[in-house]
Length: 499
Image 1: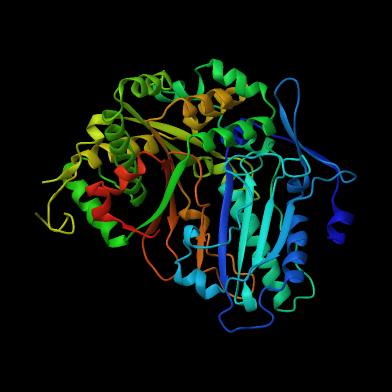
Image 2: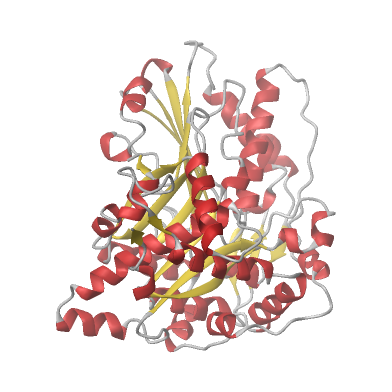
């Protein structure tokens, strides 16, 4: 820590619309590490801490304060004389690692919780909004370690989060192997780099994106007026009043391949990716569940729900697909790794009733009882996702860039749309972040997972754990629709419940 305090410099980083468009959410993951050979030198606390602050030298922005001025422009201010150091907590547990293994890392079966933040960024105990939270739990007999790390989207996206975690692990592994010095790595934090990477040509937004980025809302004005800390408290309280229920599911590579073949039979699409298939499956499962729930509502409850969704047609369902713009900006890929915000949500609208029509009609693509899958609904959903992905050119990204940066409160109006749209799902694919490539010198994690619950109607496509293939899908949805998802024949025929 002393070396970090001596080397850190005062600096101000101007943030932009890309940082705030997803700033309402945290990036929280829990990593489970096993001491496979009962080594007394298993991930020692002093080495983890030393590697942490050595890595922080390369990510000084994480020791800054988030400041928003009277014009709604945001900055991270790093003041070496008044640092906002990350939250770093160490604790011990009487639980043995073998217990966590037997429980399949199910947080509902474990008497410990490493998660120390909610779904949205809020102030910590000292009144400051921390830009990095870490909680390390050492398990009984040094049998293993649970590591929780969180960053708010205000300061980075999943790419930046995983860059820090991999670098922390790399530095610690070098120290574990006796390295006398650790070479310095450079990361880019200057948001002007993103501005320079944008093409000069700009494509106008389509109708769907205009609804997300260009429509002003009363709730949006209120949300933009709040400080980031107050906005976070409001969102966390909202999550408590409308609780989420979350599960993790597994789908094998073989199942995805079979679904892709079946969808290809129903679709003119020349290319269908695993992401297209998984996104379509999630949209169908959540959409059908929402449709079933709305049909069973009473008059008053139905009226209240309609009042919450003034921006969608009665039969409309919104899949807000999170995309990373880095691959679309060739100039950005050629530069020092840029770890600022580079993601946003692109809406794909579908019919709620159409989503509920997917089912089974007796071939190899069917369910566990041999019933044939009617893939036409998934084919339609895939077509919408594929059209969105193919249309996301660099000039289209430039159009979004203009929309979210010309008005510094744009993010709040987009957030208002998400909050007032109960029939939706936010879908992000985090398989590209190599969550299991975080070896601190004593082996890779056996399990990496999001928190027990998160935002409502949120889905994350995750890489499978080292001993399994395919994908994990994390679903955190309104508690009242989760039973409908678990009862969904199409979903349950192609996935298995982990916990």
